[in-house]
View 1: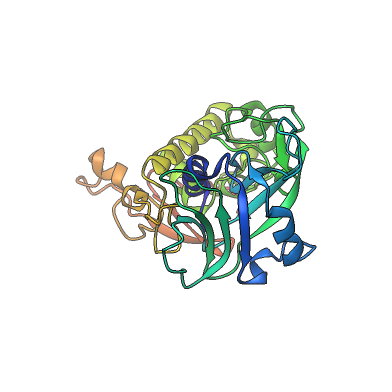
View 2 (view 1 turned 120 degrees about the vertical axis):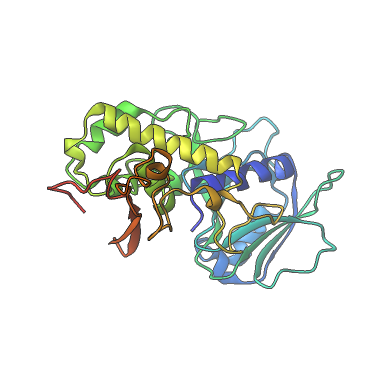
Length: 320
């Protein structure tokens, strides 16, 4: 599933192509991909047609496009947004109209003309776990920008208003995170809790914990402040590196708006490396001395966790 860096790559790509353009025509080829729009496909089409995209915003893994209605004043604050959830395999692609439809094309938006810009925004989804829907924009609780965007408006899509800010958000509060983290649970379980900190999925949680030298089962109420800061800093650093690499693509299901795959998979230190020597143990010479760790895989919440048993020793009284 795309995580924060992958969704941010898509957001940045869309921002340059769609902001300021009007939606001229909407085709819903598979109503299942707009099932979250409770009033149905016809209402979805009717409300989108003629609307102008004002911005592209992300909080965690939620992505939304604030809209100005066809008859709304030019200076009116947006009240509605087109929300995109990529799910397991959703893709938002910018394509010229001459490009043949993708096999799993679900929704097509034809945009107003812009020189040297593709005419269409297409939503492609092989597994149909993702989707598009219209949602109200509501004020943020703290009066700060709703998420990563160019406009920095203090508005958030209602569907995303319940999730916490992510480590890349300038308004992310470590103090609030640390205060809530003190509830007794396992560290990785806490990192995956979108109400505590958003955008950190399974891959980047494992990479951040490896970088911070902390085990996924460490009880959060035993974490010292410096350790909590270390894991947040590690999560931020690993996601920034992933963002610079275009995200992580294990298959063709995640691509950016131009259809290109990310290549951060080549830089993963722990995730998916079961049975391989720990890169840090190799770099620091422990492997050569026969004291290095071999990355191990443990079952965790119907997923997998990857750790180095030397760098990230299992706590005696861990919490899974």
